[in-house]
View 1 (cartoon, one colour):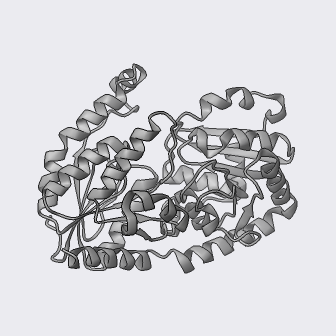
View 2 (view 1 turned 60 degrees about the horizontal axis):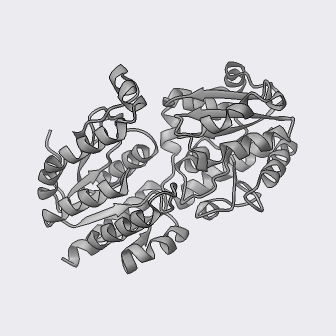
Length: 393
């Protein structure tokens, strides 16, 4: 089906699932409602539902761990090289889509070096490219100088770079100069509703959470920089706490195996490893009193907005742009320092506050998300950026 008449936008989200895909789904739907004709280029095995005004074009084909061949090749360290080559093989088709668009908007890139090649190819079509940087900090330390050079070169090719917080804007100044723009991450109330209703007591029983425990949830991709080790160490100091963990492992679990088996945490941790469908996600959030995001480095967090969508307060470290979306004492707890001791203090305070106070802060978080992060407002601001780029030629 051809997209409806309107300004033509090519949106590129390469993964097809996960947090960036959730963001892209909401943004493309809101842009279509604003009159844009949206073509969404994504993975062949994407999880996007049909959406009015959005034409989904499967472009990227990956090795995943949900197939025997994928698991075998990734176990031999061949997953990233093969997926990188498959991504590069998709670029001619991506360029063809770009030639039919008035503007291209990319939702970041998994690997900066490949992102540079992609943006360079897209610019050959003479269609301007806007990019949203969902993370502006470096997670890995190896080849740091090379990645910084790559980011600067990529920035030179972009018409605009969208970031979610003022803290991010400071980081990208070296890459894009005055072409950086702050547009907040959108709310996830709609996404939260897709998992259906989950009842607290039933969810706790299913997950093995004692009725009187203060349950905190770590959700999403489990990377080492997200502070899972800190959370487990802090919970060990707060006997009334129970830790829920739900998400795909991206290296964090290997570093906490001994902690998970420690006597101090016996019977106080529930782990649901793997990609969580929205029904499973709803159950995890229903069982939780708080959502823990003790990230060691961060830009902004879709999980934080999802917590607000489920009316759950958050516990965060004071890093990056996280503090820009949390009202301490109103929508959650901001630790005074990024340390196990301060995280334990916040867990203990949330336990003493009790379930009703957690509910109050969670409801205030949902109100804050509706006030500041509504998708129609974000779509209009994004469309304004497109208009500025097109007007500048």
